[in-house]
Amino acid sequence: MPSKLPADTTSANVLVDHLFRHEAGKMVSVLTRIFGLKHIEIAEDIVQDTFLKALDEWSFHKIPENPPAWLYRVAKNRTIDIIRHQKYVAEYEQELNLLLKSEWTLSHSLNNLFLDSEIEDSQLRMIFTSCHPELPKESQIALTLKTLCGFSVGEISRALLTTDANINKRLFRAKQKLRDENLKFEIPAGKSLDERLDSVYKVIYLLFNEGYKSSDSDTVIRKDLCAEAIRLCKLLAEHPAGNKPKTYALLALMCFHAARLDARLDDNGYIILLKEQDRSKWDRSLISKGYEYLNESSEGDELSEYHLEAGIAANHASALSFEETDWENVFKLYDMLVKIHPSPVTYLNRAIVIGQIRGAKAAIAELEKIKDLDEYYLYHTTFAEFYSLLKQNSSALKHLNKALKLTKSKAEKKLIKDRIETIRKA
Amino acid sequence: MKDYLFLFRGGDRSGLSPEELQKNMEKWGDWIKGLATAGKFKGGEPLGAESKVVKGKKKVVTDGPFAESKEMVGGYLIVTAKDINEATEIAKTCPIYELDGITEVREIHHMDM
Image (cartoon, rainbow over all chains, first blue to last red; front, side, top):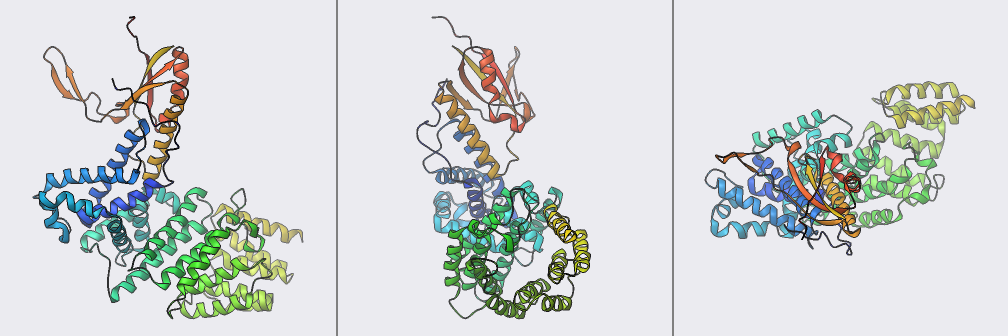
């Protein structure tokens, strides 16, 4: 009976945080390149088997010196098994088909695919595929979390505040579309690259926002979403296909926002408004990262919405207090932003800035011009803020009560109720 | 001191996400390391999923014994303890219960030399 000693008790042989999650994204990407998008499930199964094997080995014994290399070796062996068994049946990705079907080149080709540069390449292919404009937006996000971030259905549904059934449906639709449309697992080139990049940016930004804005889901998974969005954007920036000023602008924007993540909620998970946030809690290292990326983003002459939003976020990040914010500059940026991206929410934010510069009356006049936001709770809380500044408390209360009906979030409801209390007492 | 065999059943981990698998693994690793540091750990291995049962005078071979993974023995550990009560207390600190697993604690009878 073998009686091995477990992991030696002196050395701190621990795994990097999220190692499995990130390695899952790498391995699924590489394996999808081998088996093709039609067989993405085979890739996912191999990865799951690999982790289960690691679990058995590593919890009873020592964690290997180089955990990723161990995982790749197991995944490769499993892949070779599967390829040998199906050699005459399956068609692999075109460029690899012959190499994988010959015993002479099989093992060597697999080894090459697990080189760092090729892993990066595969992950980029996966990013462009998961964010393919042919897929519905909701499916893009779910698929990105599943394939690149190794999230389970349960984790995705918790992160996006929906049900498992819903996420399963979105993933099913995505995979169906990948098969039906015969989409290629590739990095687009030439003209289509820019278009496809825009689609990737949108998904990354949405992913980040899901993590940033939602306050009811649990904090850990919320932060994970933000971290994953930043990680994916970095992957993009490090690859020639994604190394663009816009990529850096998006990175900068997310860093500035992420820096405020901890200051945004109190100990009970309730929202603290920008005005009242303890700015000493802002993460200075993320802010300086933000500035670095903002610098990188200024190459070239493109001024995207991400550039402008990053500029606005940078202004807030550098202000010592809410009152000391350079509102004139922020206003200029918003003015440019509404030209590129004239969304009602951008107009709403612009109106708030106008209020800081020209006062509550001017802000209310701007707010009244905005269409299509009547069902948005922040539209009404903004009205209420400016009405209360003008001491028009009954109008303020009317809007707060309307806002209360429009949000389901506990944290947001609490914030609104507190405001109603304060104004009633005044 | 006596030796006890811990038989782990169930605790199916196949549905966990990579993140959850990593956490689960870290818990097991910490647990076993803790036992080793305390001088309680004598050995143990996980067991593969494939299993055969040989039965009866005719030595009939079947797959099994259990079709359901929740009853399958997934691994064993040998632990030293004063008596079965201490061994059971140790078994209670195992991470297997989070995933509805079972630990069976049995004393190992060594031959007196």
